[in-house]
Each structure stands twice: as structure tokens, then as C-alpha cells.
Length: 152
Image (tube, rainbow, N blue to C red):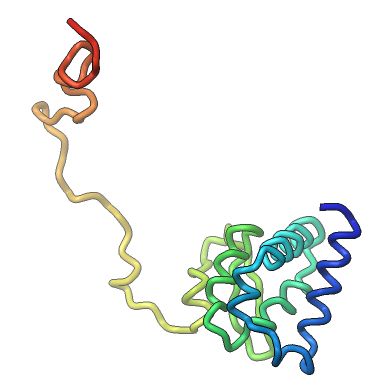
């Protein structure tokens, strides 16, 4: 994407977020558009490069009170590595590498998660014995066995 296309894309977003035009914008259609994907990629790249979250704040304000807000927040987390949380004055961004960071959905909805919802996988408690062999290491899956397409 060249510089002119980036400028045009940012100008498009600047114009559709105006209140007098926003009421005519179909938000689900914009969310599924190619322009939104490019805009999100551009803004997340800007955040990663400069650390400036102003445009990201504007994008989340555009999707505020829509059913796509959580989806946009999860896509931001994937592309820029930032978790989004809702604050009184706007949105707050937390690095996802932070040890105490919560999931983006919990931070957006501000629900207190129960301890049962935060179960970590500690295994089934079953220990491997001598008779337990992984299915891919079993003798019937070795070369020359049935189903490999080779003759003995």
C-alpha cells in the first residue's frame, strides 16, 4: 500500500466518523469491507511503530455501542499485541505480555470472572505407563504396515 492509498484510507475514515455522516453508514457492511481490514492493518502498524494509540481510540469509539466492538478488540490484540479495556473516559490499552492482563472480552464487559472460568489445563492426572504407546509410534503405523501404501 503506497502513501497516497494510506492517506485516502485515513481521509475516508475521518469523513465517515463525522456525526452527520455516521448515521448513514452501515456499520456491519463497513466491518466486513476490505477497506476496514486495510484501515485496521494501517492503524495497528502505526501503533506498533510509534506507540501512538490516538487513531486506535477513534476506531474503537466508532464501533462503540455496536455488536462488533469485541471482535474489533480481539483483532487489535492479534495485530498489535494490545489488550483493550473500557475506562470512564475512553479505552485503555495494556500490553498483552503483561503478566496480570485479563482477556479482552472480560476487560470490555467488566464482568468479574469466576475462578471456575479460569481453569488451566493441568492434564487429566493420568500418568503414562510402560504399556501406553503413542498412536503414531505404535508398531502398526511403522513403514510397511497397513495403510501406508508401501509393501513389506
